Length: 221
Image (cartoon, rainbow, N blue to C red; front, side, top):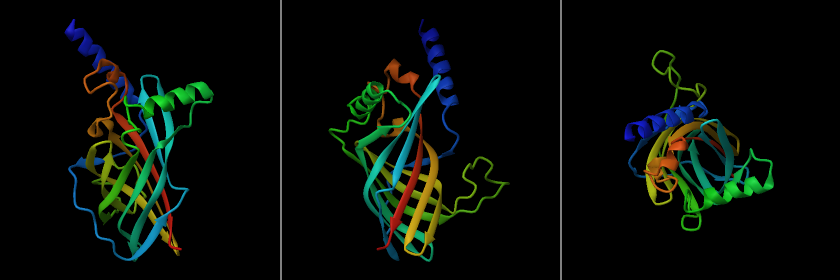
């Protein structure tokens, strides 16, 4: 019986991963020292968004979080440091049109079953390092964002966990405006996002891989 259960779980997990958006895989390590600000400081604005997509067999949900505050420092067109705060209570599903179903999903995700927004109302990303990125077709066959300009490393704090993640990003600095976009996948379990616990069979039906799209806009006013 145990073998059958594990076999079913493996099939379900494989199926769930199959419809995860194709994106760069964020490399995850332990917390690192934040980078020191240098250059011009750009304040993030209200148009900045974090878009998420979670998947399960035969389906997916996509939504957003608002970025409520933050800054990015840049010198000579390159990011040097920065951080931004994500308001977990702004979680909003974008694919459900039925108000009842939409509200139920949002409430479920904000509950202690997942983000536990009442206890952990914010998440934070803090830059620890930035390196120039140049796509090389011979050595970077797995890279999806081929037009990335930089590799950004930063501490991502969510719930009571902090992990350092690294991903390609496209950074543009024009006059007093700065934008940074990225599209990558993370393993939600690294931050304790497990439905009713890490070993609960119901959690097996949800892909561990979550897609994150960053669209950060900032200005030097």
